[in-house]
Structures are given as structure tokens and as C-alpha cells.
Image (cartoon, rainbow, N blue to C red; front, side, top):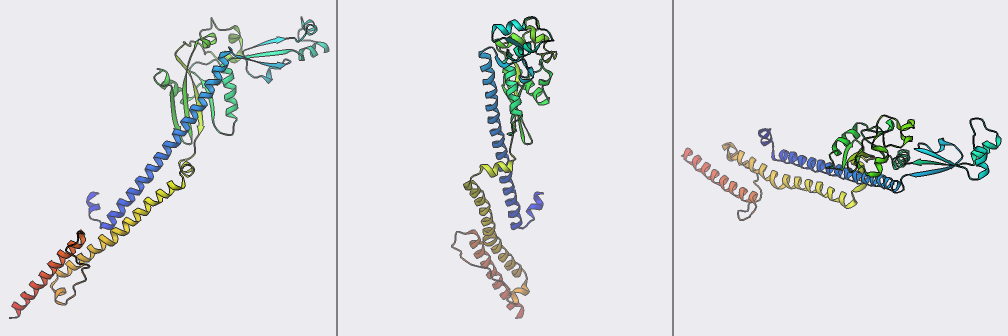
Length: 341
């Protein structure tokens, strides 16, 4: 390959090198732009994970949160751990004592006036916020998962299993993969003492955790305080590299890139005019000198500007070749004179 390159003309060699240079700049620009896009997406994912952790910390501060609704309508509140009912006054309490499935009109009205408190722990609060984020048009979403979960709907996917493997030793709290136009990010969750109330073992778990069908998926126990036990996984949409370049590069940056390619064109024009063209004239001059018929017919071409005192190497080479040509012509005339006599 190198031998073939060496046999090319200088202008062709320059063109190949210029193309390689331009391709290198373009590739480097794409790599840098991709790195910036991924870095921005990672920072965005960290912000989402921070928000999810803050929500969990807030819920843990109060030992969970209870949602209050009027009347008994669990469908409005979604998933919950346990429910507590309170009658607003004594008369309603008297009406509801001993009520079974059949009630009269008065009992129905009393049921509608009940205050129902549905308890949600921090993980449930985080999951409901995650459901809201999944419905957002922004395309960014998060969820909580672990190897062992109460609710099988929260079981980890393939990426999350890799993230759990990468963070289980506690040396790194985060793991991410850039796949196409999406960044998949995960941050480990370290269990604290408040988590053990539900996640220690079935023997110590609240009774409602064992009887609620939503949380009987066969897992969710065995957590240890201070150990990584779960992850917050975040999914962020990333722009394409081309779009990111178009959005992030300022007019000055585009001007700088244009200047680089303009300099390449100027270098090509300079090389063609100041190097290739003089060398071609010298080549033609030398070819004529090598042929006695050309000298005899005085067909010696113009050798170009002659300046032996110039620091320009092409000028000095031209002067040397011109002197050599003059010597050849003198020798040719002497040889022809001797042959004629």
C-alpha cells in the first residue's frame, strides 16, 4: 500500500492526505459530540435519580404517607399497604356498627361520609411518581427494582440485571449504557433501618404485607442495612449526534470548522502552484536535455524563475538545473564541432 502511495503524483498524495485529515477531523468531531451527548444524558439521569431518592427520603422521614379519601373507593387510590376507616361523627359510627354486605339507605350514606386513609410506604410513593414520569411526553422515565421484589411487575429487565451485577459490591454506585437514542442509567439503593420493617424477613414483616396479593410475589425479603439492595433505573432520550452538533455548536464553532477546510483548500492550491507546477517544468526541461534532438532544434522549454540567491528550495533547484542545462548545451556544441571537423 505504501509503495503504491509513493508512486502516486505529489498532488494525488496531497489529496489522499487531505482526505485522511478531513476524515480524522470529522470522526473526532462525531466522537466528541457523542461523548458530550452521553455526558449530558448521564447528568440528566443523575438529576432524575436524585429526585427519586429525595422522594423516598421524604416518605421515610414520616414512616410512609397516608392518602385520605371520602368514602370507600380503593380504585381511586391505587396500590396501598393498609387501609384505616374513620367515621366523622358518633351517629355514623352507630349506624355502621355490625354492618355486613347488605345495608339500608342510611348505612350507604354513612359509608360515603367515612374518612378512608390508605397507607403508602416510600417505595410505593416513588413507584407512583415513576408511573407519572412514564406517561410524560418528555420520554424520560425511572423505576425502582431489585433482584428480589414483592410485586413481580417491578422485576428487573436485562439492563437492570447487569446494573445490579455492576453495583452489588458497593464499589460503584452507578452504571449506564448508551443504546441508540436512549441512555439507560442505574444508581444503587443502599438499605437503611427503615427498609427492614418490611424487607427483613416474613417473620418480622407487617401482616398486611403477607396477606395483600399485590405484595405476595415470592420475594422482597432478605435486605441488610448498609448494603446495596436495589437500584433506581432511569431512561433518558438522547438526540442524534447530528442534531446535537447542530444545536450545540455556536456560529463561531461552525466558522472555525469552515476555516479548517478553507485552509486545506488553500494548502492544495499552494502545493499545486508553488510545488507541483515548478517540478513539472523542471521535469520537462530535464527530459529535453536528455534528448540531443531537442537541444539541436532549440526546443528547450522555459525553466521558470531563476534566482540562485533565494532561500526557496524550488528556486535554488531551478537555478542548479538551469546551470546543469547550460553545461549540457556547451558540451553538446563542443561535441558537434569536433564531429564536424
